[in-house]
Amino acid sequence: MSWEANVRQVIPYVPGEQPKKKVIKLNTNENPYPPSQKVKKALEDFDIDKLRLYPDVNAGELGEGLARYYNVLPEQTFVGVGSDDVLATAFLTFFNSDKPILFPEITYSFYDVWANLYNIPFKQVEMDENFRIRKEDYYGENGGIVIPNPNAPTGLAKDPGDIEDIIRHNPDSVVIIDEAYVDFGATSVLPLINKYDNLLVVQTFSKSRSMAGARIGMAFGSKKLIKYLNDVKFSINSYTMNILTVTAGKAMLDDDGYFKDTVEKIVATRERVKKELKALDFEFPDSKSNFIFARHKSVPAVDILNAAREEGIYLRHFKKPERINDYLRISIGTDEEMDSLVDFLKGFLGR
Image (cartoon, rainbow, N blue to C red; front, side):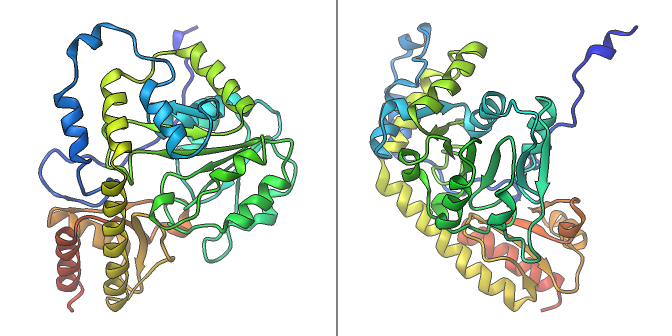
């Protein structure tokens, strides 16, 4: 028997393309603006001698800073290497039932990858005709629930009252709310962690805080929930976040004014581009994220995707599920980058 018979084979998550050449990159939902200058200063002043030491397993000053910023206890805070690391650890920790976990049919495409990797049964719950989640669909028996808010790739935000209804109806399951894009227009349910001990709220520095390259993710929950999460993390690798990243993350967290100004700029650009896309006969859900999920009323998405690429403008296309294969996810770049996209579309569409 070949050794390959014992290999855990999975279909991996496929990230957005990372082109080597200089292009207008609107395919990976990165923040178009750099981190705060406080980050640069903190790294310039970093004591290199600290690199010979192991980092704090709880991310030291960053973990403490997150607890203060979000007004929670340190014991309610978990830090990981990007929210993907946090979510993967959460799947491994909390989803050990024979019952299927539930998440939307159109959502972040890593969820089913983790479920398959860890042999977790799952069910992808249908949305309505407008890509909206129906809270009642999550009231039934299950082994856990994962809901992104706002959703990716649609950008739609769910009312926090509806999310609380889902949590309330599932006292025997862990409910994970993935808030990777929450800062761009949705309302966080983080305050509910003191009301429901089965709620885990996950966020990231990758989008609104301009630090996708640093890989900083965090989760908030009850003390009991976070202890279970740490038990699994420390059984794999206690020292997941390096000291340089902790230093940079703490500096970014300390510049709240810069963070909020950057988010406001992205939101303003998004709202302006929505109007321009509508004028070009695009239709899309009302995004509360840093991207727009759009389709043209008559021109296939693949034609636009390929033509834009020829002009050095990269967009994201999802081939499945079938109902979204004519949509493009357009990340919000700088005003200049979005102007270039709109100019391209006007020319391509003959406007």
